[in-house]
Length: 205
Image (cartoon, rainbow, N blue to C red; front, top):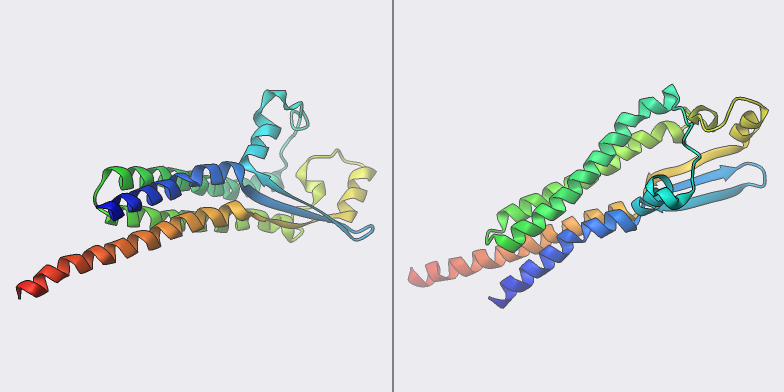
């Protein structure tokens, strides 16, 4: 009986951990290179960092108020929205897995939900990789982002600054790890319970 309680507690904690992981762990890694001096500038950004920068009213950041999205950037938005959708699904699956483990005696639904959670994180990686591809291969340069007005300054900056890395950071791997550990943990307990049910049958025979 005790081991069943331990199983539930660990699964619930792991499943609910996807929320703070997604919010506070570094979600996106951005690295740019400057040809002058051969220097690199990088940053790991969490969802909370995005919230503080773009949503919170006291941030003082007003740089995107007059931003007009270019056609090139607009074409990549479906992939970014898809990545965000996979992230949202992952969080919902985390909550659903925790609730199922806490209030249900069956472990198969927990196994299925956590396995689907792993697949949703894989979808997050693939969608974001598709979103980032044109920015990394030079199809969309700094000049095409629409952040700077046309002129000599934009031409110079576009020539010397290049995006080198744009990818899902450690938060994605932690999300996958949480779901994958639940899969292994649940599968192990299912095998133990299967062995316990087979023992009475053998002794009866």
